[in-house]
Length: 420
Image 1 (tube, rainbow, N blue to C red):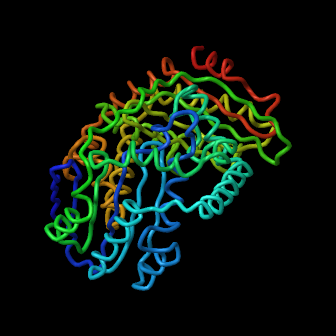
Image 2 (cartoon, one colour; image 1 turned 180 degrees about the vertical axis):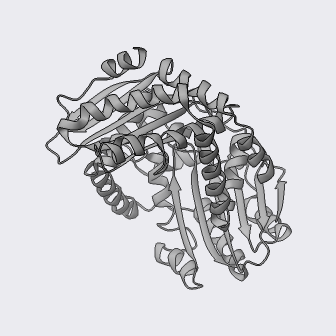
C-alpha cells in the first residue's frame, strides 16, 4: 500500500492510499468543522448543514444526488462529530470520478432551498426526539455537558430543539463561509484510486477556493460535575467520566490500553467483576475518547435501582485496585486487542480513507502503521499503572444518572470513595 499527499496552492489537501487487489474505493471530504466550532446560538448547525448537503445543488436535485451514486451500485453518506464533518462515498474504481464530482457538488453548490430546509428541520427534530427517548444515547450528551460546561464540547451534536427550530438559509451559508475553507478540508481516498488523477480532478473542483487559515476552536477544559434525571424506567443508567489525555499526548495509547483492560472487553476487570461474578448488570464498558486538546474516559452501565449503589462503588474499587495490581498479562491482552482492532478495521478502504483525513487534521501528517504499532508496543505496565493512579486519585470526574436514580450515589460520594 502506498500513501501519497498533495497540497494545492490554496491549502486544500489530497491524501490517498492505493490498496492493491481492490476493485472499489472510498472517497470523501473531511471538513475540520464540527459541533465544537459552533457558537452557542449555532448549536446543531453543523449537523443541520450535513443533512442539507443532500437536499439539492445547482446541478442536481436531492433525488438525482442519490440516484447518481446508487445507479452505479455505490452509496453516499455523511456524519457530524464534535470536531469534524465528513461527506463520503464508496464506489467501484471506474466510478471514482463520478463520486468525487457528486461530493464536490454537494459541498460547493448547495442551494439550501427554503422548502427543503423545512422538510429537513422536521427530520432532525424527529432525530432529536428519538435520541431523547433512548436512555443509553441521551445520557452521554448529559455527561458531556457536565464534563465541559459552558463550552462547545459540552453541547449536543444534534443541537437543542429551540435552536434547530430557528435555523434559516443565511445561518447555513454563514457557517459554510466561515469554516468550509480549503485549509480546513481534506480530500481522502483509499482503495482502487489513482493519486495523480484525483489531484487533477481536485484542482478543477476545489482549486479556485480562496485560501484561508484554519480557525482554531476555543480551548476546552474538563471541569466535571453531576446531573441526575429521575424517571420511571426499567433500568437505572450510570455514566461516569474522567479527564483523559488528548490526541497529541504521549499518554494517548496508554489511556486506550488502560480503558480496554479496565472495561473494554469480556475479559476486562469491570465486565468480569461486576457482570460475571456479581451479576449486577447486563452491559458495562469503559472507553477512552480524545479531542485535539482534551480527552475523556467513560464508564457506562445499566442496572436495577436497588443495585446501583453496589455497581457504582465496585466500579471505583476496581479502578483503585487496577492502579495497584494491573498485571503484565492484562496489559498484553489489551495491547493485542487494540492492535488487532486497528489492523482488522483498516482492511476496509472506508476506514483507511477516514484514518488518512483524521491523522492529517490531528497531527498534520499520517504516521505509518508500523510507527503506530511501535508506539502501542512501547506502553509498559508501569505506564498503565501510573495513568490508572492519576485517574482514580487526581483526575476531575463527571457523573450522569438517568432512570430510577433518586437514591443513587452522588459524585461526591464516589469521589470520597476514590480518596479513601
